[in-house]
Length: 113
Length: 115
Figure 1 (cartoon, each protein chain N blue to C red):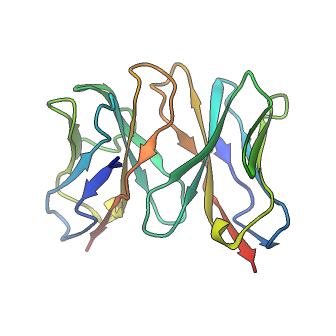
Figure 2: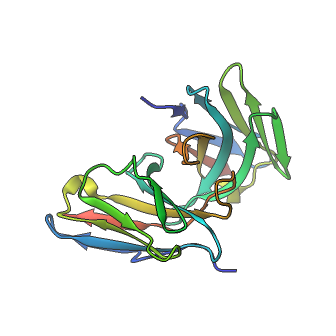
Figure 3: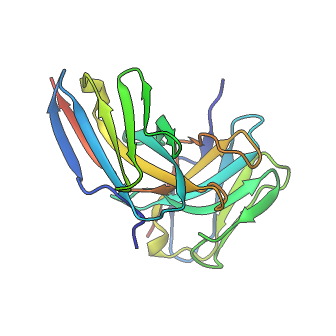
């Protein structure tokens, strides 16, 4: 039973355009959400997070939106750059669960020059 | 400063061998996590330490898996009698606060291949 789902295995966008990566979750106890970026042969690198008391968090080119009623979050990257090409993982945690992260299966983003 | 380091980066084991994977967390980080990442999947939680105390080991797949953090710093994940299904990347992550909500910082992982 996948509690965090990333239904798009891959996404290709033109440099300079917006990239939108989506994530759905099923566990209503999740109250903290994160996005990580992963390059080959490296560990996941933290990008941005959002608490369930917010519906938006912005950091430079990266914005995460949270829709609690739909149990959906998205990561917007604008403008997209070729160096953003990587696998992006959505992750969630619940306060009462040792803060372990539950990850989606990832979306591979390709930003074309 | 130094990030999370893991060793070895790559490990090849014959089925039935025991392996030990090491994690050096960021200095001063209280919380330490181990995850297992199969090919094409996201990381899956294995176990969690707060200092030297193992507070959650619910993700360990079998009693062949054992983790320790005896002095509250370096941690070792041991897999006994390795099986082919143990082949995966093993990721270690650390975070600063005890019992608080904070970002987990990941190491580069150890890729284990069991032949």
